[in-house]
Image (cartoon, rainbow, N blue to C red; front, side, top):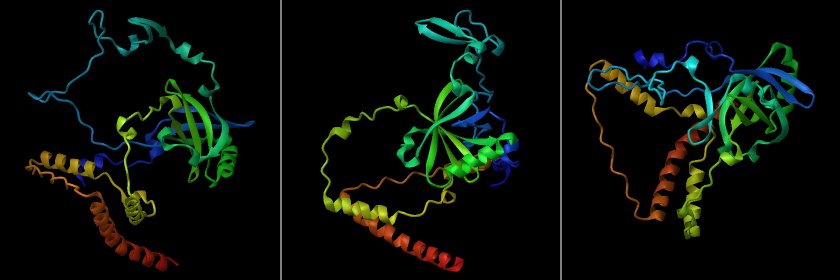
Length: 289
């Protein structure tokens, strides 16, 4: 898309658009690797502002003191921890600097584990670890040592006022740090429905496995795109151009009367869809060889 869509895409190298969010060192054994941390991901979504429906004026939010009702500037705001109802202890910058943990200055790798031992539910956010020039050789050494054997380093790091459990892995030629939730931050899946006994027939399981087989393919993330964002952007562009927006009614959901029948129909449908794709993939491989 043109016009408004161009504003969404970056035109400069990502490194030029990002600032170092943390500086420190990776440590494993007696080896220290000075690195800088960059955010590895960005969430692409259309940004909306809240407006007054009467005159489309922007809604502004003010920082107001609950005691005297006065607006407060950022310079006069401090961090307070509520240890009792309406009673706070105030922490200054030097208090945070005095926290006696090594993870505020280093990413200390405690051990290495196979990546498939870690539940993906624990992963939070990805960061690129770019080496300082003085640590380039040690950086390359760790990268080659991890290699492609599926192992990751387990470490702790502190930034953004919080200590994180994290993994370090190799992605192409760069080391990636993935922050994780602490185990006690994962909620227990306590749902009464899961305690109810459900009888599943062997034929249904086999049919479901056939459906999974038919939908199994090589992972190619480039095949997926945010269709909702593109469609929403299209509506925005039409409204800017003064075009009328056609509201398309959602189709009625299909009522599944018989689970086995639905599985059979799904298996047949996916089998027909997979056949042409499989032939195309075979021709592509033959042409490449």
